[in-house]
Length: 289
Ligand code: SAM
Image (tube, rainbow, N blue to C red; front, side):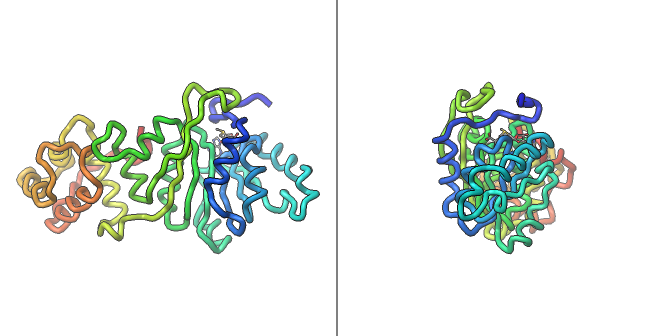
């Protein structure tokens, strides 16, 4: 079946990489694993052998029904537990999938895996972040440059809104990178697999999730501006800015990209205490590119 490039269909054909992705999930023998975009089932089959249950979310109707048919008639049925009984292929846009309901039905936090369709990488990461409380860990393949940003550290070239927004929901660990030749058809970019252990930091940093994420969008709004200028542009009373930055121990000339998340949280708390968190609206957190 020809791949649909608009659905990000670059199928993994490197068996070693498939083994490494599934191994990176750790023991999932009694766990429900959600696979995003199973495609032709490259990862799904290996996963079915290792996981308690697999929910495979595929948007492409044709691929989903083909995978369902293949898994139900596959040779694994000769084993003790059939692949068919373990894998549920669900035809759905992952951006509409209710991870909380699935976790409640499984009575456990979910594990997620996926060679992501690259055209909606950021929205998928944000959706997972939203459900961080019901997720345990994820192993995801994304475009290398995106993985660099997801795992970026303050002060590095790759650090920005995407890094903080993701890392506020748990630490990220890049695992390995694959060349375009590992896929069919080959994409134009290299791909990196990373692990994300969900452990939201909002409580520990004493910030409220929604307003703090909005604050991050405001202070990262204009890349070349200093944090102070972004704060003023977002509507913080200019007379408060220097004082709040100094109390949070942040250089007046610093850009948000150079400041640790702990210091940004301290700044938000100080502004909040003074009733001075920025009020201006900001674009929603959809496109983090
Ligand atoms: N897992 C397979 C592999 O590694 O060979 C396929 C990976 S391919 C990069 C991405 C898959 O995501 C495709 O099967 C594509 O049809 C599917 N997909 C695209 N958009 C989707 C969406 N919104 N929700 C769920 N799946 C989607």
